[in-house]
Image 1 (cartoon, rainbow, N blue to C red):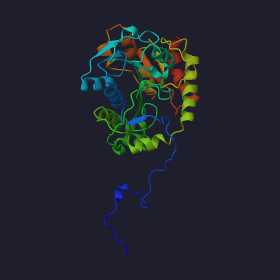
Image 2 (image 1 turned 135 degrees about the vertical axis):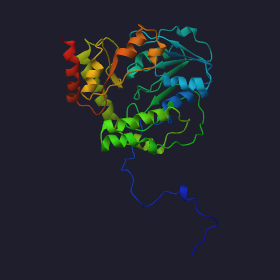
Image 3 (image 1 turned 90 degrees about the horizontal axis):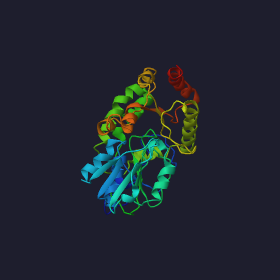
Image 4 (image 1 turned 90 degrees about the vertical axis):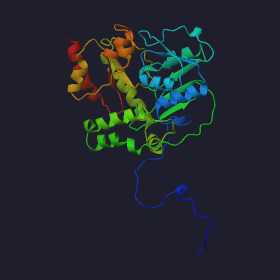
Length: 331
């Protein structure tokens, strides 16, 4: 019998046989050349660490999760307002060396204005958490979130203008997938509490590399199909609601949106949709505390309804939503 000088490292060997795992195709991720980490907040944190920023300017109308890495790293920050097209109200020429300007690609609709702004300064940090399909601008710090667009437990991508080698511990996601499985096996309502738990858990996660589970799921996605459905669904909403929408955000017809942002003065619309089991997001509760009452940002946080455009919705589904909205706006 053959003998070995030392025991083989079994944990490094490919397992053969045994029980079967999930049947996932070995496809390709959309952001193949990006750095993979576990959360969007940690992607932003990596940008702050590698870019050696001394101060950050960021919009009032934004998710408060971006404040966590700024506070943790003790980097000073200052808010700026946005106009009625969601463009920054800020004198870009006033930026100094070491100051970063965070701009949000709101709802996946701001590629053109972000590209124009980037031509004016190299200090831009692009928050593409709501615009997964937007291509990164060369030599520009940029980060993305995956779970806003796809059914994955966590995950984020980033591109750095400063090339670095990151040696990070690999994250694990199996314990964060229960809400995804319950939605399939039971119902969306049954999984919602577990979804909320997962979101809360992710807010305190240390910086790690994207988990094997999340990456495997992202390799299993038909990105072209999702891109096409989201664009078509957004256009369907826009044709029906453009004369009723109080928010006028230019859409070039090709950008892949996160949602259809419908700004309304109907204070009861959100509840009527909820009564019909139509679940819409509200961006962002924390803005109401930061923004002055009556300000544009305060109005957006109170009255903007994020209508779903995602890959699960057919035009029949959207017609059901539109019927509820237009019933009140035709009075």
